[in-house]
Each structure stands twice: as C-alpha cells, then as structure tokens.
Length: 278
Image (tube, rainbow, N blue to C red):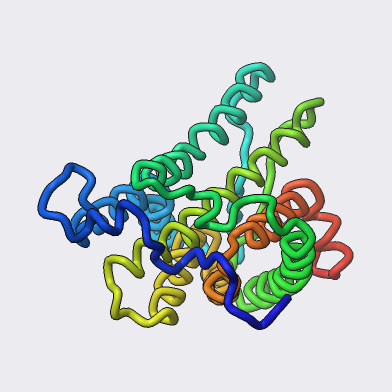
C-alpha cells in the first residue's frame, strides 16, 4: 500500500469522448448532469436502491411483530423442494442479479471508456489487490463479529442465517457464485459507478459527502437484518469508500467482500462458535 494517488483513479472524471460531448449541444448520449442523474436513478432503481426501499419496509414490518432478537433473517434460501428446480433458480438468481453491473459497463463502453480500467476491476496489480483484499477481509470480518455480537446482546439484530439451502453436490459452488454476485453488484454499483456519477452530477460535492451517502445506502439495504447490520455495513461502506477514492481500484473491495460472503455462506455457524457468539 502506497500513500499516493493512484495512476488510474476510479472516482475521478477522465478526459473521454463522452466528457467532450457534455459541452456539445446535441447527441442522444450527451453527458449532461440531468441525463446522468436519470441514469443513476434508473441503475439504483433496478438494483440496490430498490433493495434499500424493501429493506426499510421489511424492518418497519419486523418492528410491528416480535422483538428483533426473537426473529431471524435468511440471506440465501432454497427456492424449490425439487433439486433440479432449486439449482436452476439459484443459478438464474445470481446471473440475472448481475445484469445491472453489465448495464453499467455497457453505459461506460458507449462513452468510449473501458469500465474495467476506470473502476480498477482488472488484473494489472494482482499482488497488491490480493494483499489489500485479504487484509480488509480480516479487519472487516472481525468487526462484523463484534457488531453482530453487540447487536444481538442489545436486541437490535435478528439471528442471521446466511444460507438455508439443501445439502447437494452443487450447494457450495452455488453459494460461492452467490457470494461473487453480491461482491460484484455491491462494489461495482455502490462504489465504482456511484462515485464516478456523483462526481459528475455534483462536481462541487466533497468526496466525504459522496462516501457517506454511498455508505448510508449500503447500510439501508441491510436493514432487513436489523439495526446492527445496518450500522455495520454503514461503517464498512465508509472504509471501502475511503480506500477506493485513495487508490482508485475496486478489485480489492470485491476480493474482500467475496471472502466475507464465502465464509458467511459456508462456515458462519463454525465462526460463531469459535468466537463464542453461539
């Protein structure tokens, strides 16, 4: 980790044909602030913004029922009693959930910008990305256990069941695919894409305002699990956002998020027992 500005900074606007088009009078893809504002609203409405609205509504409903400590929240569930259809639903859920990521990449390609280089979602710096990702995984993982334990003790967090999927030969690969889906969707949309568009739509907004806004949204779409996970993901969003604006690469964030979800889906009960939280 070098405390220097990265060579390619994801959040910073680059000089591209699209930015030249911002000053032109016409063209169907003219990058005006209004156009980008609608684009951002549509992308979030199709993905994590929609999830945030439903999560807040689910939390409100939970508060009208039993205490949060007596409830549970499941992340990955079986979709069918029939093994073939359950497998089919699980795979299709992950594939279709990645379409907003594909849409974002497509929009950047239309501007003549390579989204993988812009976001730092490539293999140009594998050693640094991997080391930073693993370090983040360890730090965030420990913090997650602390926040979860505190939330359960305070009665503001539901019992989280990361995966409730039948034991089949395909269960582990499908859960790893789901972890990859979550990591790509959240880090590409909530960090790389949102930061780029926010800087263009609101050029006078400070970077910390953007980091906090993205972190609040990240926390919001986890509120269906209770207040604890909302707070934990808010803090995670602040850390991830700061690292992204500093180094301009989303790959370490994807790696860290992937490892967190893989461990949660495949070994969460064991981790809780080792941490004496169960």
